Length: 295
Ligand code: PMP
Image 1 (cartoon, rainbow, N blue to C red):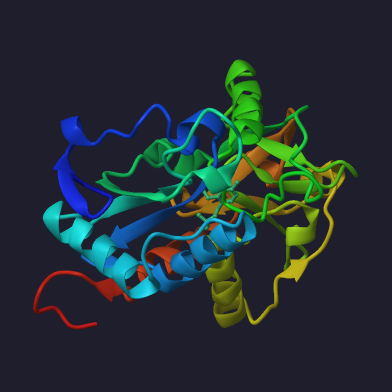
Image 2 (cartoon, helix red, strand yellow; image 1 turned 60 degrees about the vertical axis):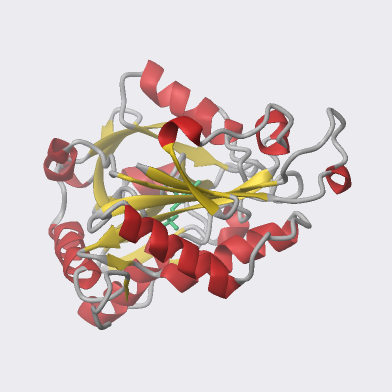
């Protein structure tokens, strides 16, 4: 595996950052997870826009511009023959002293890892996820805004620990008002009476790239607009269907929450249709990276 580290491709063994990197010391940095399908990078510019917005929000100057970043990603895919894979793009605040002050870090560190993807196990896509509600609340937009995809994921990790300890697949995170925000690494949707709902970004949801894709698919195939509204646990218990979306997870059904079955405890037809349409779309579009291949 060849990893892009600050302008050079290095082997896995050589891909090391300093113990004084503020990404390690403080979780000070931003990242993206991106997919390749059939030799194309899916929604590359959308991911790069979100990265730029996250970086801007924490006053982190990206070490290279959009064009160079794009090329570095495509080259990472080429060197790793990443026809169907996952790219982890990480920008840390870089090398500094032990103090918090980010302005003493002269240059951000850029890391691009091309890897194989670990989705949920295949069976989960057939039987659906069992969820719990985490006691750990989603970060408030007034403290660490969840709209920024920062390296600081402890909030999500604490909720994931709750799910694992409860023997369930995933945790739903609520915000301080008790409304559903999202899951630990995925957005959440419900379907009820033919309408589609998802929490708004203001409720603590990340503006997921897959969430946007699903909105497009719902419009195209069901002639509906997804409604961004505050959702309660009760809304989830009483939904016809529930599913999660994310770059790694794609579209995955959820069939129970806190011991209540959702929609009869089986993945619904609407969710299954969206899973199929999503799979078709990912095979149709994207930025090709293999030499001589046209978009
Ligand atoms: N919420 C969180 C907290 C995430 O980390 C992610 C990405 N893994 C998502 C939602 C889904 O976003 P996307 O569809 O852009 O991957």
